[in-house]
Image (cartoon, rainbow, N blue to C red; front, side):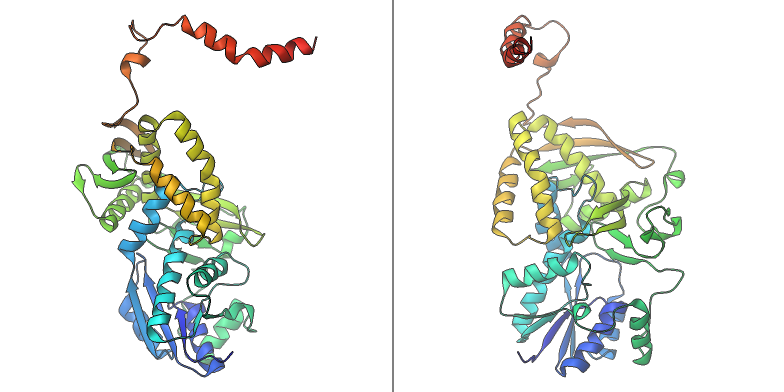
Length: 398
């Protein structure tokens, strides 16, 4: 299949800068460098200039921040998505929106091919390519890491120097990182040994607990149908709300995670994450659900969270099963309205109050004082009926 024009998912880092030059030389066709703004701190003028200097026909920078928070982060947090009990899916959630916009640009620009900088060892190749294939299977996919001979950082650096491409990776900062409005991740370097503690200087979004304030910060978060809409009574747009939470969480050392996870391709990988705002959001949301969701609805919903989270992690955001689960999750969120008060202190996010017009909590029923709505003697029959099968098992053992 001949290649006429390529759209490359481009960040301006070492890998995609080398890929940009390599694609232009290898395929001899125009390459459009596309960069997605999902909230990373980036000098976009420098990215644009570097892309053009490295051989791009055009550099397109798409501001996806609001859509990312509104249509990817918030839906996932309505479902309390979490992978392997710890990871809040910061990178996993960003990949489908980046790839979706890449497909749109390819169609708009008349390109017949798309390319990315994900390696053949990681999850991102799957996430990008499942999205390409789900949205436009006619596009040719070029994955340089799976076909070229530049199969090490040393060779990439040599290629970059040969072609006068600035090299951002140094011995002092060897980490591979990914940043967006939900998190920043770190991999590689000393982190490849899971026994090594991360250097404190590595962290960007949060202070250490030792350096956090000695007095707690209290905030109130308001939700409508499971979606956060306000902090301390001030209604905020999606981007502003996540930015505010990230600042509050980072100031109070909230959201650091060091874990070894199971990649979709089969290997284990050590990653260190900072997710300050997302950590606050998930804790607040789950707390509000304790008073607004029926017990059995909550039980069924929670049983689906691991499957839902694995779909995101493995790259199946645009799958039929994901659409089904999202509808189910969102339907369960209709009564999740109210306010949660949180105490932020030295790495801890502690719910200390919650209220809702949809609250199923009844002080009249729950009180330890005298009440007129609950006959405690009814519990005797309840216990006997629930123990019947246990009694039969015990009798059979004798």
